[in-house]
Length: 112
Length: 111
Image (cartoon, rainbow over all chains, first blue to last red; front, side, top):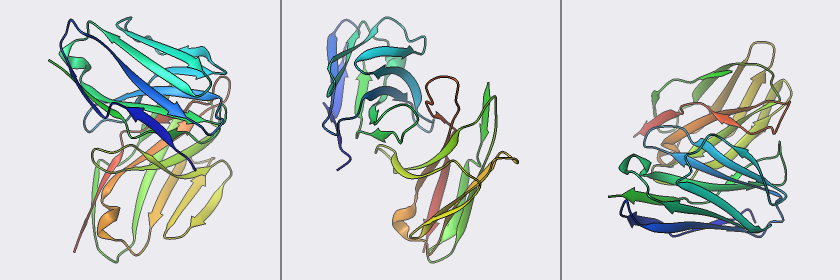
């Protein structure tokens, strides 16, 4: 069972709002990822957590703040976003680095 | 740096065979993934090639030539539901083996 669950599926937020995207996996995977995907573009890596520690931050603006409360959960806290941040945000996990990455269904974010 | 190239769009007929190519130029190479992504959905894993050669999995096969920096995904007996974007992604050692995605190939299957 390769399942990564993301909530909410859709989120509309204002530029002054604070919201969070949530991701959960129960496959015992030790690496978790956030990707951002714009229409007709490939997924772009934002953050990687390995063994609950942030291992990669791809120069993402501080208005995006990741959090890994435990090995099964990954959050992305959003604050003061811009309309250009509207995109599909994909969470993914893998057994470890170099293993197959499995994606969740994504959270569609619209910033108004 | 990494340069991954795929055709932007391809069309094919139901029941036919289609080959989607991916070429890459990377500073180091570990393996190559293929993912399928239907519109509005998340990418789903299709294959992972590390060694040269062809790997077959049902109607889908993936080929890799490390010396040529080249891979292809072969889809046989095309079905309408195969209409999707196909993403090639390369991993390299010396760090975290995180895949970097090509821009994807939009495949349209028509009757």
